[in-house]
Length: 336
Image 1 (cartoon, rainbow, N blue to C red):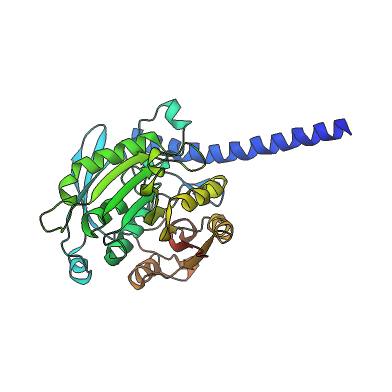
Image 2 (tube, rainbow, N blue to C red; image 1 turned 30 degrees about the vertical axis):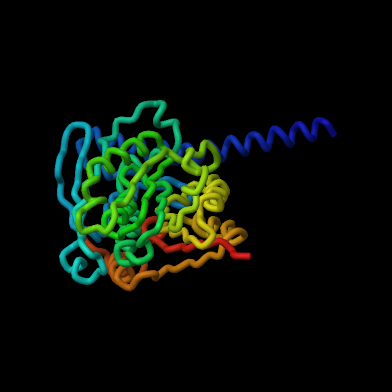
């Protein structure tokens, strides 16, 4: 019996190591692809992607082009780009005053310690789900007016959180990411855009802060006290590592205000999104919307390949719906 229990323990340990290795291999492929692209002199945004548990090179699809962008600075170590609403959207959206925001991405040059650290994918590009979340937020500014907002897994730029802070009149925005390098870059982006958060046209300035925050341990000090009661929590494309789902749900329970709402935008990536939703339903009221916005639905339908029943745009030959089409998930606490 002792030998049977010992054999069972060894088998369990082997499986745990195997699953951890598979997750690590996915992260390594993402980063290795980014480094290879950088050394080849190509755009730093072209990185690998994790597709339903296996790594596939689908990041050749760069963007849904929801915003007008142009290059500001390009040095051997960094790229600064400007993002602003397209002219037609400025007229349609209920934004009091649109503005231009500057975001920075480092050109990949990762140390071994950083490669082995907390998920580093947010350092290599602005993912399409972040772009969609930013666009959707600007279409719904009333959701943020006077509210305290936190973005989890904001990556290196926190594009959505920055746009909310500049154009949706929240009381405060807290940008977080679990990777130290990403968190440091978030503060650089905030410092560069400070004037956008306290323009004369704004009734009151928005307090924008940053912190390193991962779920499942090592929480930042901001989780203590009243600042942990956020009215709105934003999170884009942070569901692809299923081993972090439970920790993310526990974090949401601690930081979301009793009447607050958490908004996620994430692609399905195999069954990763469904697994998160299934786990979240035990703790939250959950609403999943595949067509949460008519403008986005119309745009995304144009990106469908012939295999999905639509034309493939010449500019998006690598578009994979399961990996790139963001789905909206709204979570709110059950009220007793």
